[in-house]
Image (cartoon, rainbow, N blue to C red; front, side, top):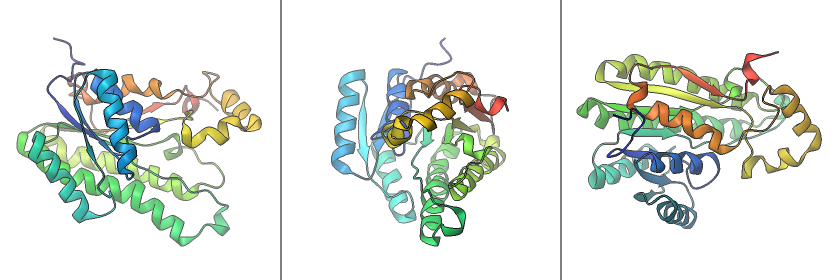
Length: 254
């Protein structure tokens, strides 16, 4: 048997209509899972789901619930469960970024970051976990960041949310491990996406990234897929509460 085979499983990847989430959803589809594509823009989500289904030959569906709204989360997960049954795989990828010098950071931006990056992962994990507990199995993969371990100027609140994701992951391990559920985190380094295009095009910043990263380059979204499939598959059945850094070696060196 192939321990990385996801055939017959169902997955939800939050924030998967573009960027890293889109690549993660594609990777799960290629490994055999059925995947719910999720995002806030319904037309963008529908387009992504259709394109992925055509490209991979896999089965997709769409969802647009607000991860920060408990009632909306409950309805959204209930819709998935009604059609596909309890989820086997949850990837908490939905997230936002805000940048400002710390003395000028607004409370509204702080609250937005906490609501989406941390409360959203809590709410979706809690609702999905109920079905996983009933079936006695499940994989929860939270998307963290190198900023859970390393700080940079201008993003202290974002780093706080990603640090929280690490401890939420460990807490899920403690609570859900006895029910046959594994909760782990992927922590990407600096990846080239639509959202980081301005940074990639900044020659000074790109020089810093390539110098600071032993791999000598920005990450490509495809670099995350193998690690995700490992954490989503039976290959990781005895891996729980861990953070897997996919960062080209950045957090390993000074």
